[in-house]
Length: 355
Ligand SMILES: [Mg+2]
Image (tube, rainbow, N blue to C red; front, side, top):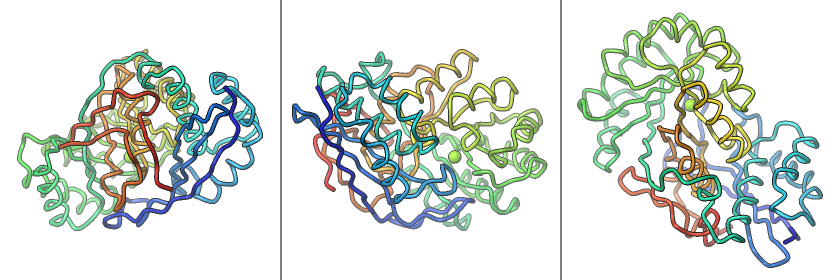
């Protein structure tokens, strides 16, 4: 089997409503879908979702990057994925959303050829699990209304974006907890929005509202700050923007800086690196979450295969496809009342993508 072409398709899908976090506002998913085609006319699908303020890429830079590394892929056998990815890494630093798209497309081809789902290639652990649903930053009362709607839709875990104004952040969680009662799990994500001392003050105030975990309370580069927060609060602290690569994970463990990692394909460069991070965490007795950018069901399906094949990924935040006005994907995972089920189909299990 040889790769004969890579089609690159930019897509722009509007969100149902603007998604606001402490770092900025997103109104549409401006992603890139790739189709890697082989001489046997198999197709492997991949998706790159940029994040200018987290991974430093934009749709145009992803397209440029793909065109730049295209010659490395043409003529290669997808089963040589380890060598292909080594060659790409040696040619172009960073650009991990683009690399994630290639990784999932190559694995899709390997799965399609061997006629087995990607999760079987890595050792199946589960084929269904629950995801949370995320509420962006808004007025606290509006966020509480969103929370009630999410619970009515069948979700049992809500992720709440905070990290703007301390008093308002506490009000947000208070309103949501009072609106949904005590049976619903609440996670908070500050997206780097606090300084360490403010973070400790905020988190101590949030403890009474039974918060499951707090994600990235301080800036990504402030590992000492993360550790300082972790040692001064009872709620588990999760790294998101501070952990992109397996190397980042090792450093955070060496410095005892966090309790958990949020793994995202767009930060680490694909399923294979995501598994590396999870295995590093597992060896240190840590659990992980798998999260997402504003991704369609192509990348969400790929991330679900990672969850399906990895024991210590015990938390899932893969809800972004629900926020898109259109769904270009036929096949792939289904989300029903907060439950994600993987198809028993070869590769990613995607039949087609409208581009
Ligand atoms: Mg986060």
